Image (cartoon, rainbow, N blue to C red; front, top):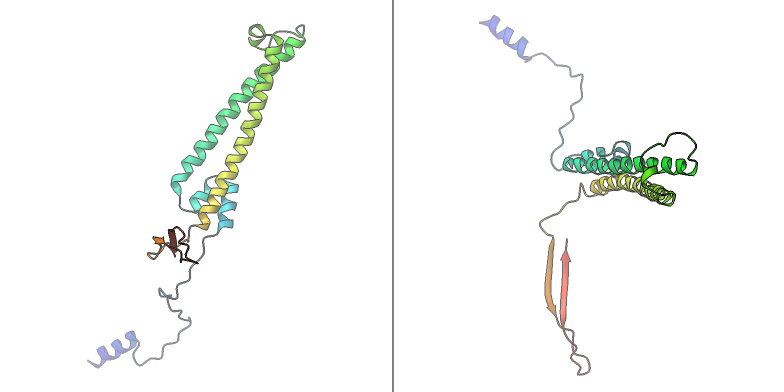
Length: 187
């Protein structure tokens, strides 16, 4: 019986001094919890490095397909306008010097020189607008990530109220001014 008691005391640690080599840190409670702010700067950097990554950082995953659909649309217009610009440019260059070899495409036979020049300028202008729109879309998706990150930690409490009440100004010198309404926002 004494052997069982001694074995129990040795294995359970009773009667033997225990040395602690680590420091115990209490777990944070709800009132002492460390909260990290959502960083708009980090969202901007992520969105600039890879479009859509800022939206993923903000946990707005549904916006990522919209970002890439916009870039797909921009790619389509860039490709379309580039191809047509090159065709009209080559046809116009050939029309100015018809003895320079074989025609680059059938546009030489379909249009006059002035129409080829107008087509070249038209598609060049559309190509430049497409580049500007692509850059604007890139900036817009980064701006969306930054604004969304600013509102990520925004707390809407139950005490947010808007009251509409009638208002009548005081009578001054026997003159009764007309009334109105007051809007009161409490937050």
